[in-house]
Image (cartoon, rainbow, N blue to C red; front, side, top):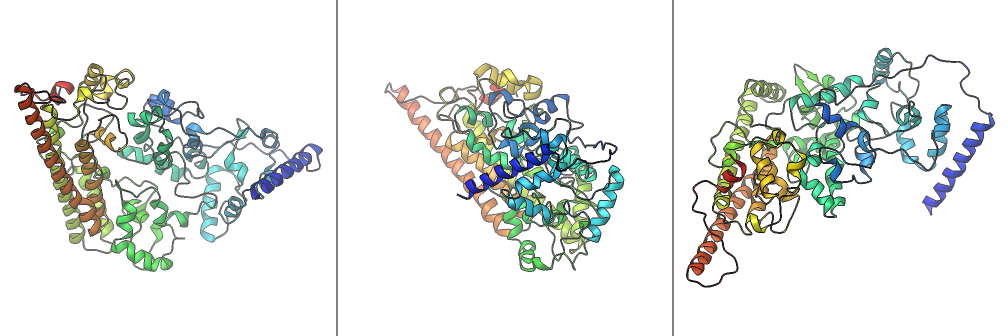
Length: 569
């Protein structure tokens, strides 16, 4: 009933607005002003030429994003999650008649009855009152001097109207940069530090074949769980929620937690249950979030650090909108080069250009990042304490990757001896395996992997970082097997949970969510491998005795592993 009532209100109000518009009762601006030409920051500047054509160009909902854009259709809500690529203006009303006469007042007149919450949020914002506090007034003056335009109010028209196309838009970071160029430029600079970063996070969805495979299998609606975090790469409201767009709100840890949580990156859980998080929860009302981070008095206004205070710090007392500049372990998914591997991890990234090379934790660049962390932590702790903790976290990660190496070696050997059941020849293909080699060039996919997909049509086991994570996003007929799924959980969930527990100093997550289940899964993998080998030996003996068996497995007798044969490592 409320919806019907509001719809009637909207219709009647808009009808009245149109009458006013065309009757000439309210006149347009009397004096001609020099046209304001906005300048925008291109967050994709510096990317390869092909990148904009598959991520930045607006195509509405007719095709997807990324190199596999022709293999799926985006969900309807991608219009709002990723507007730069997928937004389509509303068609129920022709807004151009309002836009051409710049009738800003009509936006509020129509929408305050049906979108009351949005209008009220806007009325509390600095957009509505650009001089609501002395600090905001100073920032507004800086913006005015930068853009050469006086700002009395920033209304719906400024953000939601594409004046060139005479149509409604959903603002992107580029649109916000018309006034907030520095912040957007800083945000865009994340891409200079490699993956993962916020600008390129959509790649994690759409440059992996199982995303498209879910659509092909009629399971595409489930991809919304990925899109709602990874799709929000070209806009600012994941942190500065609309329509208040409060900087103070965005400085609170809660602003990060809807995305930075869960089994592969429990940042919210590990920070929230750490001593830092508990003190913050107990004393949150004493924190002064109205102050820019660079002006915060540590110990007085922030007794413990927030997500933003740690991750936006650039060194030398400066803070920017770049959250990844100090990242060393890169979410913990990329193997380090600082340990010796027994498994095929020694060949990572297998010639694939689209994923990162191994990380040298002790490189000059990473040692410089480490110094910035120690400088930051030394606001409250001694440098010896901070440096010792970070070194201990490195030791955990080296240890965790050695456990990962043990597990991957077990799977390597099972694959080499054709012990997986079902065998690659009898199982469903790797997601997209029947078309990957036709879409991706060998120079991007890696010659070995490209040749394997071309030769087998995708009937090939793929394990370990990073392509092996498909085991947690996809389930074909017999692919992946139970032991492969256990391994994927071990390296992608439990190793990363232990890492996040260490990084945020939360001991329970570090052990019970991290190392303990890693050891349990390694035990499961070892036991399952022995069972599979025992069954294969029994079947082999029965086959040799002439008795029938349901299927045949056994060693090939070839010392060169099946992985080496398939991927040419």
